Image (cartoon, helix red, strand yellow):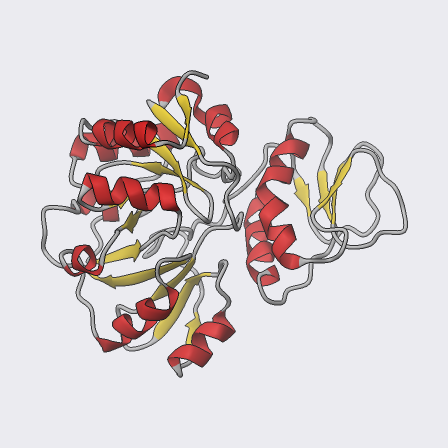
Length: 316
């Protein structure tokens, strides 16, 4: 595992050097670990898509470190400025009209005329962005369709030494991907639920956010494919009493014991459940049981995003 380095000035500088030479590196975001590449390099983008086995019609999220960097690649307006003043840096991705530029190649955004962009809060990610001096594309650091990575070891388990550098900055803070909203049309559209709930966004913006049916065949946003976040072991949702031979992912105070099992939050804390979700799914998946049965999880607050991830993970 000599491609894993602890977060330091040395590892950050090494990441910048590697990105500058079309290499791939993995960085911790506050959401999940990302697989980073230079979106102005055809070679780098193709390497990322091929390593992840990601369909080319699934656009990448572009990460930036400043408003100046944002304005060089996207068209913005007063609503955009208002939203980012409150929620950036942080786990909110915004879809905006794309400006003609050489920093983001069409391949990185699947030929769309929009860009899904965000400013991460993760110190290591921001440091790499600032030293690199231009945007970075970074989807989750796992094979397409599999469980997202929230630890450096998860990234290594997925790709071994096929990545030149994995910076270990500990477990991701939230454990779920960013919320994605689309500001490219007259309506504000939720493209993916995430860490930031819709109600706080609507209250702050003062406008309704619409939830439309997902286009799973020709996505106009990352995170749209029907099957996603899936363990190899079949998943069964809303199971209150698991069967023998199944692993069990619990939530809240339970009046029975089951082996093997993990509890997302014994005290029923949805934020703790989100933090543990992908890590615990990976642990249970390694046990090679008949199924992973999942206890019902409330669909309120961040629980909505947890249930969305689990529903996609259950798809065959």
